[in-house]
Length: 293
Image (cartoon, rainbow, N blue to C red):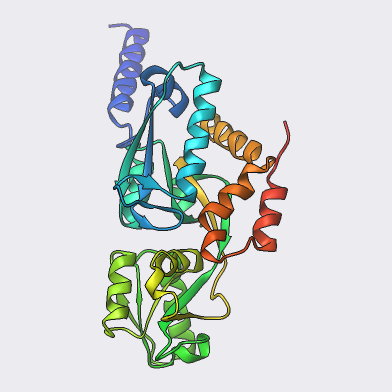
């Protein structure tokens, strides 16, 4: 065997090994290629995060983030020249489930209430920002927690692997106030513990807490929320890391929406009617991200 033959054989072996060492979930094609080939757009979504992403009374996906993803899908259908596009909704519960589904290629996009963080960007990419909120604590008016100063000695329910959990753990460590956390898997579980008096408060993003309270007409006067937020939470939609063509397509669809009056109508439909006016910071976010062609 000649030296050239040995080299060629080695290169073939290396290529073969590389072929079988592709990380789990890594796709040989991008989202746009897959959507064009299959006519299917796979949307992962949080099932219990109203008013952004949840199952409605009929068990169907609904919410602000869901509408944004539908808009992105319709834009892809038009740009790809597809006569029909099927929307496949994949219900996801925990933050880790949602993150893994995108990172492993099980869904094309995640439409929930996800804060952009640098650690998450190690595994996934994000679209343009879709909302800005902050962490807060919900309590019963009979035993209110009006501010962070009232957290001393309290037991607060919070979902694990969230930015709110990280904020509260840091607060407890720095201030040494005896604050304790009770980890819950869903917003519903947190609200149940609060209503049963088993915890003093339920912490989550303000937008999530508004959804939990204002979707229950009979409960609107029973709760109090901390007056100021405990953190800054910029939301965006998670997409596969490194798929620049799809990220540009999704950002183009969102920017087009932000340039139109429709985004204000969507905001009103999912926040304004629950008593949350359009804040200056969210209005500025829409304007700053209405990127032109």
